[in-house]
Length: 446
Image (cartoon, rainbow, N blue to C red; front, side):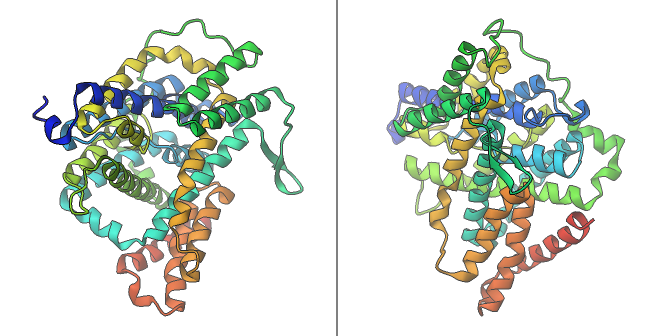
């Protein structure tokens, strides 16, 4: 085992790897609670049950996807990077694909499955690198920041801090309402944990907020802590049903956009995380990432696995950096994290106390972390600033990640051409320009 993971060469041991894996798990364990609530559209009232995914099944699917993905990453790529269903991608799945486009969640899972299969092909052929290199870094940063704002907006809305206002579209909510006060408390306590550098601060913040909610009768007290693992049957294998029962639903432009968006966001989320964490761990060699192909393959296999179990796109987590900071250097730490996700299946009763008010602070803090890429955009270059800004601002204002990406990718070649930089635009970007113009004509314009 030590030889396989190169413990001696990397100056690590079992103790450091186990502590690192545990730290990573605690830093990202919030996804076990947040993902089921997002995919079941828990914060949206008056929806038919057919539009909501079963929260218990999604909880199990989330844990299994995270476990399988992390173990794949540890064994294949030997990196201390854990995986789980991605924040942002789950919001796109629930709020844009299902709620806005009206695409059934069963078909949306098929879209996740297809994007994972395409990702596998791109990872094995090397085409992925060409596509990534064709898209300017500024737009990649803008997409990440825009998703961060979108997630934070959802959190503020779920907390009741931001509400609808007929005069100004949105406005400040009733800050004296019980659940809103609970969410504000949760936000303050989570900020304190994060500012103090406490590993797993988001997770601990949710637990403490839930306890306070129970004390003030805002949250129901669970009957137990450890319970029977919920059935995954309501979501398991559902991704295959549209393929056999309604293949026509997959031959539409909206479905194509869904697949491309899942694929696009996972592309750059994974690439950015791999490079960032590998740099932090000192694993980069000559500015290149060793075993990058295996890492990308592990990520894409995790997405396919997650789609089969019944959850949105599984991706590499930047929270893995917390484990690296605690000493993790090898894939053994990722395996430890994966095993802990399996163990977490026993704690499903905790889901009942995780209301929207309890999870809202986590969404807001994740949004804060994601907008950190803003400082990497060259705002002094107008031809870059315009598409970047429109990408970022359009996501929360249109309540759609796909729309933000589309607007940014349309304006980028236009501003570059007008500024005399047409030759600097990769042909692939011109192709995307056409795709997204068609998107507005046939999807948004219909």
